[in-house]
Amino acid sequence: MGHTILVTGAAGFVGMHVVKQLLGRERMPVGSGAEEAFDRILITDRATPLIADPRIKAVPGDIADPDFARSLVTPDVKLVFHLAGVVSGSAEADLDLGLAVNLDGTRALMDACRLLNTNPRFVFTSSIAAFGIPLPARIDDDTEGFPSMSYGAQKRMCELLIDDYTRRGILDGRVLRLPGIVVRPPNPNGALSAFNSDMIREPLAGHEVVLPVSKNACLWIMSVRQAANNLIHAAALAPDVLGARRTLNLPAVTVTAGEVADALERVKPGSAALIRHEVQPMIEAKFGGFTRDFHPTRALALGFTCDAGIDALIDDYVQHGS
Image (cartoon, rainbow, N blue to C red; front, side, top):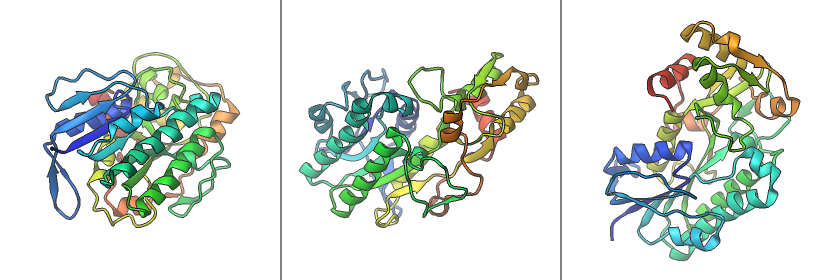
């Protein structure tokens, strides 16, 4: 039986880019210079994308259905990218939905690994929402997470479970706390941080945009190609390099909304005038208060990278689009 890579949430913004990058490979590094061939990429989402490649097998379904979730992890699955999730606003508005997808769906996948006793690599997308408010003035690898939204709490619970399942030898977990990933296409999916993408995409298209944060709001953002690179890099790490703490804070571009406007103006004069601010204090507190005093030391030491700065990030979008 060949080796299979499972990607949940494959129709999502990040998921599509991970699949695209995987299709550009025939082998995956597995640490210490070794590589492993894979024969198939099993992709799943509520509605799976159509991808014309013989290595792709698409299985639509709902990760909140425990039987479906467990059915995805078969003995040939050696690597899991678990990207499926309910985003911040939706998880806050519907506690049961957030728990069913973000917590129970993740646990069902992990328990499928437990039943098979195959110890697959398990790459999970967590979030900087795990920190909560008030956001610390300094954030480093030892900063505790005290989530202040259901979404962040569900992600934090999964982080702890992955630590424990890894300790038990059930799976080999690698958890990345993603910053705001941009530039997403317009999509009313309930993400309260959607303005991170709106403030770049809309002015460049000549459209006015209203931001729920002030010019001084400090954001952590990353291009989607960089996020996909980092997820695949996580899968390629040797099993023992993370130790008992499997969660990493990814490096990110730390920038204010005003600095984003200045960068847009450099690319397309007149863009900054299309940005208006109507501050929503809750959103500013939760998504606009991140510190510049940020030290993702472990991730940097392990070779994770971020965009060179806001100008490079915007240039990436101009050159490649979403």
